[in-house]
Length: 328
Image (cartoon, rainbow, N blue to C red; front, side):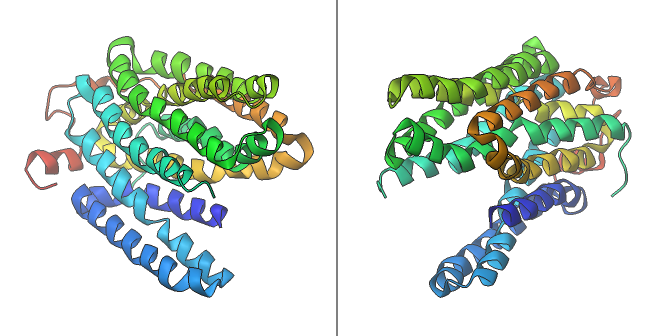
């Protein structure tokens, strides 16, 4: 079910950018909300009470189109309407809100229970999309395998694990704001390389080896979980950088980026599915650490197009023109 959901999320994420160019991001957001609401209601009132597996797959999968159309449609809107010199800060605020809702509040509430055309520079845009896949691939992979590691090997209760998730993503919320602003000052590529890719590689390993050595010590686990959440935020400038690779085709570039964002929800669990049996959790953390280091190399190829810093109107994309005309 998670794999099917991940596929539809990936497709919905890709569509969010393409449809934003055609319809405008506001309509894409409305469509995403409507899709999520309809299939959420059907999931709760029809599929779950019936416990029909094919029906669950269908409805849960179709529900996956909803949130990426809404959330990533809004992200397209942000990147089209924001001045280049403020782009990192703007997307930092966007991911601040996104992370505050999707993983953070959900984990906290659960713990209380105690139970179009090819864009120019397509190769660089494709590299950016690949970086986006693996920037959060470890996050979604860990959400599959780490609950069992922390409860069965380390000795945490399920409630303690969920509180640990809340610590992780609470740290991530505020780090999203911080690294968005840092990226605007230090440079998007430099911020992503050191505070995102390299830091994630190190903290992936720490998230496994520190609790393994310390045992059921919540404070120690919380520190490394927070550091991992902070490191994930180091990739925030990717949402500013990829549109800068193709400034005349921001919608299409964001489609590729959003496809990568959606695909990460599939790629992470897929790595776990393939590696858990032969390599165990230790092997998985090393694989994700290696993938993060690979993104550090890939980021070197993501130089913004010089046209991105051109005066307003000289390189406006169709979406940007529509927004400035007052028709989002």
